[in-house]
Length: 319
Image (cartoon, rainbow, N blue to C red; front, side, top):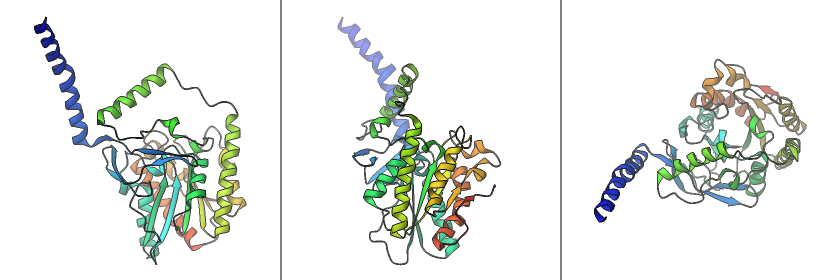
């Protein structure tokens, strides 16, 4: 009996433990499966925990002391530095599939420095899954970090996205002991959603969510206007444009126009020549999509910084 038990343990070691060990080793060599840790917040839902080095998909980047992707922010802002803050969600954040230097935020910072002949710092105030209400709540409590210009980046998928919580996405709140556990959790979540699909939100309805989002954006834009901060709103389509409700774009644009804030629609540059190449999954931008967005954003943000007229309702020219 003891001999049989020993044989069973040996087979378990060979067929289970060893492959798992090899898988874990491969993940570490490829630097995969090391996601950021998140913290809950009563006002804006959640944010990444500060001071982390992470690599979800093989491109390592830093979460700074403020809890956002990128370098630490000097406080107070150094004299002579032009700071542009982009507030958004996973599209601006970039996820783990886009390198730091390929993000449109970083590209815009470099492009503005060359265009304006000044030192420019573009900061990435975004978190995956945030809705418009999360963004507005963060700005209301934490401010704009001495930004000279604030650029809202609102995707079509945000138009009717309610205020989100950490529980909704099940982002990790502690460092995982094994990287293979990250992929095991992803596989389990996908399997669970296939077998037991999540119920849609209660029908206080997406129309109610839209109104709450528009009200939150209006309050935030009003506050920025009163504070004298140059603010703009940028709209990002999905691979399907703004379907199925293109009228939502009009509603958001009207809010910005009502307080004289310039807008930019990135649909033309992301639709040409091949929209599929601009997106990783139909929603999030590929490196090529980030580059196309940056080419349209650089002259637009330069106009915003200069306070030039004629940018109140702007569509980026097609590539």
